[in-house]
Image (tube, rainbow, N blue to C red; front, side, top):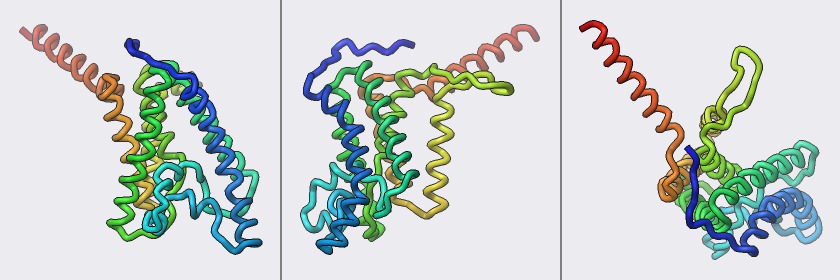
Length: 243
């Protein structure tokens, strides 16, 4: 089913911000280890991870901007490596694609509202979880934002497929997303990272609720409903043939 937003609204300044956001994440994440090393070596003070990442200590010190800045950090390391750079590039590209497709469908204002509310709400819920569990680690990463944006994109384009070789010639992207999300949850559980596990679930459910708010059908529930109807029809046909 084609999803149309009749009241789609765009704003040039918001549009520029949305285009710039993935690269803001990229540069902040990539420069963070270098700046952290320089500040620790020269001035003996913490780096961007400490000030931008969300933590119980930071909020206690009234660093309330951390509720908005934690997605700008992707690692607590102070070592810059090729794998680290590749990871940041991939995160930025995925953010750029999911934000762009969402904006094309819904308009820049809705994307901006989703972006800010998602970051704030997931940050607040994660901070609450950190408070309950007395976890003093620094919370950061854009992965949770990607989980939310990917879920919305799957809901907007539920029938997108990837063509593969035999035995699976084609597979819908939504099932790849669901499998990847499940693997992510298992990874966090196996490493006993309950804050990131909770943040991932919060991101998924928040984006699902946002889809309901925008009246976007849930692609997974829709498939289940179709299968249920097919099963009901088959049962009726079988009973009719027996009679």
